[in-house]
Length: 198
Ligand SMILES: C[S@@+](CC[C@H](N)C(=O)[O-])C[C@H]1O[C@@H](n2cnc3c(N)ncnc32)[C@H](O)[C@@H]1O
Image 1 (tube, helix red, strand yellow):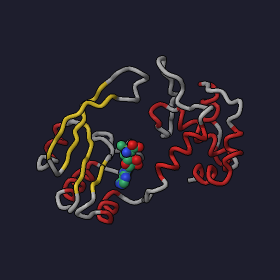
Image 2 (tube, protein in one colour):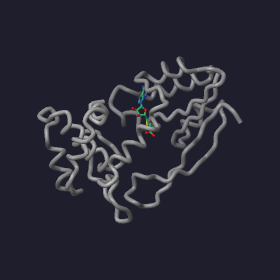
Image 3 (tube, protein in one colour):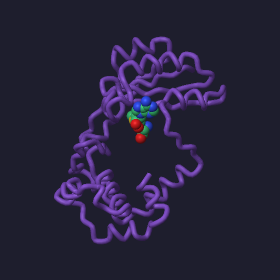
């Protein structure tokens, strides 16, 4: 939200920060070492954007790693910053943004006309987005909740026997998803699309 507020109120200064900036592993590591609370909000937003765009898989956990690829240029395009931010803004302009546990969101927005796309942490990766946010037990809660909603849902998860067992009452579709966090290597991982309609 600091990042978004800075974009809203200080866009020119934010963009100016990137003038003559280079994409380098050394700069990435230097920015990682900077203590965020020693910076102004604008500097924090610029540091966040640089690290988030340039880290492997967009993962801003406690140890982001420099993302690079032999087959394409860096994700952070210094010549297209405003364009990229503007595209994100246009996408969000007609959207409600909630900050609630998944079961609250599902209950609030469930109507016979609703279609939910549900993209939870993968099975066996429950802690990937922070400890205590989502647990193995949450898959049971989710399955039970989805069994009694009025609307439709599409849920994407990794294709595991435990997942198939837990959601066995619903329709499955197997898909192969190119795994983008693979440094340009064309890895594919099997995924399941689970839904409550044909
Ligand atoms: C696989 S990611 C979704 C990625 C998103 N669809 C995208 O394309 O950027 C799983 C998301 O679930 C969120 N999450 C984890 N536990 C949650 C909870 N208890 N309630 C709501 N969201 C949760 C995580 O913060 C994370 O953003």
